[in-house]
Image 1: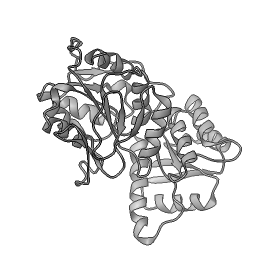
Image 2 (image 1 turned 180 degrees about the vertical axis):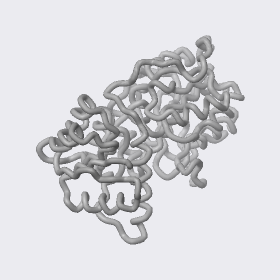
Image 3 (image 1 turned 30 degrees about the horizontal axis):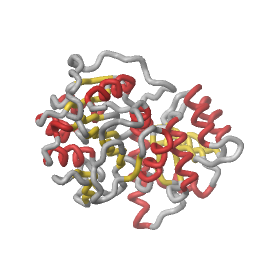
Length: 346
């Protein structure tokens, strides 16, 4: 049984969450609280498997509550945010920086038609987060499931022009940490596909733009892929690169139940014969999205890196890529940027 604690100051939201989670027979709500201070105390007392946390609450807000929980009783935390409120959304990503794992839109009620879809989304998130062992800092590096090859020699200046990154569960904080170590004059275009709840891609890009040296924006259809910029896949469209080197946002069906999908980006770069110009990085996430695309890039001469198991919240996506033989190096997060930088011209 998955034990869940709900922290939200709205009785209506708590009631809706109860109704949504009641659709699952393997989830038990062990407590409901209306402020962050009570959330901290009940988490320490009850040790739930997952905490569902509102951002804005009295006494102690969700951000401070996340920081306190992660320092004392590390627990998987799902943040609730009003995705139409930029202030609320920014606060949710601040909570992710402090250790929360995911964010989703706050339910305020649902029509009969939308109720089932909303319940499925919430239940799947709770189930996936409950399987994650979280700590307030990354675990020490352990041996990967296969020995990492020797570091690649530095490429000729200008040989690599695109850094393509894919991530899912646990990814926002990891992507931010990786980009934060890149210089402001980084000589490559950076393309990111992050699985994230509908309505939050813009907030994710805005948050990254505040936190990292490079300019970050949501990708726009038809814009050229330019060095020194970070483009993030928007919600609801695959981020791809066409033969002309421009962004093509595709409404094609989801891959691995995701749109945007990491495979769509990686496979488009391979189809455009950009493998030799690309460094592909697959980060923490559940499932196998990105593995096939990374393999296609690898066969074309892309240099490919997977985050190691010890530093992943979820090792699914990196593991799938490794098992396909699509990976040149398996590295802890702290070493990925140092491995990437020599592959690009200054």
